Image (cartoon, rainbow, N blue to C red; front, side):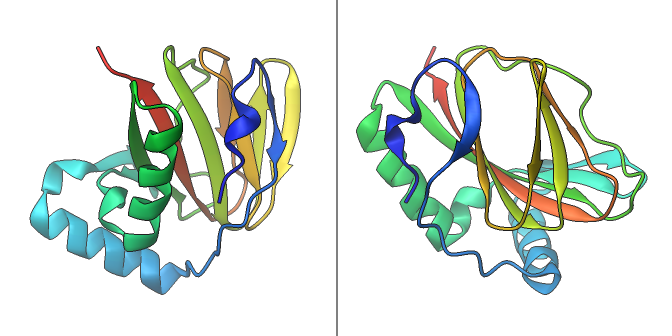
Length: 155
């Protein structure tokens, strides 16, 4: 599981016991299943980049989110899949997520992350923690997939 003690200001790679059984085949199947139920969960970012909400439907992600909710009940747990199918796939530009704690779990490939002025290279099954409100962006240069697990302030 994710180390919940990471609730502090900052960003860093964190310890965890998550089991990464994600493959491109599983990702494609998950996209197909979720978009059949709720097409609006799929968001095309351009040039082979996309996001997919509704990842809480995955039983393993559901258990992780349920655990996070017990540690911070005033926050709402969410999970999203972020995919780049090409080296130049579009992603989100530099931004901050006020009121959100983020754990980015690298599933496939490697992704360079810039958080504030620090750089991280995430490799498969590594997790990057980003505290609420910090400026960050992913800069992938090859195909990659990750899941962002978050706790968002209920409003």
